[in-house]
Image 1 (cartoon, rainbow, N blue to C red):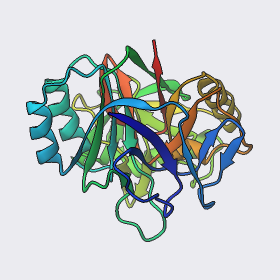
Image 2: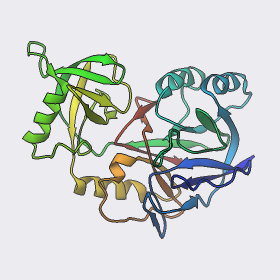
Image 3: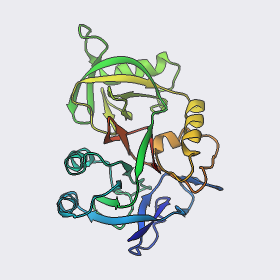
Length: 298
């Protein structure tokens, strides 16, 4: 079956027609099109995608994927929110360890608890692409800096940080504020400065008392890296990344907020901005923040 892929700004979901696959996006870009997040907009990729869709709750989707006779060449995976994603991707990796994947968590508008998906789904919608081949390419627009060790109070709660194994532990929020101040950034800037795991997966950090809340799960190894960039560097890198023709791009809404001027994608390409995106690192799709991924034909 062929599917039309669409992005739309929150609150502007088209009617379900059993032929459209897509999600809400925090603004979008295409040739000749630049839509702000608050602007009513819907845009579809000009090229249709061949494959089959599985959508619903995490458990039922995983069970249907286990039973599918298809041998997918790639996948687009869209989530209604950014929780439960890591567990789903662990099970996904067991089922499909080598296929390229792109996607992320749908953007939400004011008052929305879940992002809009088509087909409608409580947790996740997966488009298994049966033609190909494809490849997923990932962009990190932040430069790597010093390493930090951390202690956590939960999968997405950074409690304490220290820079060396014999250093003193300090409250994570205090360390992050000092890093912001020391680099000339305001306390509201949590996008041009962030932390990543050792593989280069960025984690958006938000101040929460003495702790930091991250937009994706912390790594198991207890180590992070400081990452920094500038608005100008993000604009240039995102423009170049989206200039590829025939690409479907999933960027982060946090990066979108750093863009001060519109841009166009490459010919027949479409770019959206997610509340957390799938990034491919070490050959595995992972949930990250402040990054971008594009799906292109080889």
